[in-house]
Image (cartoon, rainbow, N blue to C red; front, side, top):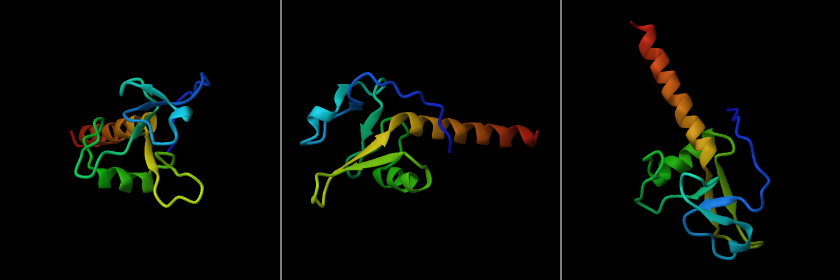
Length: 107
């Protein structure tokens, strides 16, 4: 999947939600609409952009390149999973266009 997202090099990347522990100096906090990255939804929670469950977002990360990034300290087992929001929005747009295109073909 190709994205036409222009990456601006204006300091640290923006992140919606809580900043990962120990990674605060690497990100700048931003609103959900303005952020480049977002945290993975809590267990039994839903993505505020797509409405997908946590496990559905993780599954989507396998098929959509560049959607997820895992941050870990060296030697750590656990870490933070971040979702690239422009990639998620672009994927949802492409799904919508594919469904609309299929609907028009049968008319």
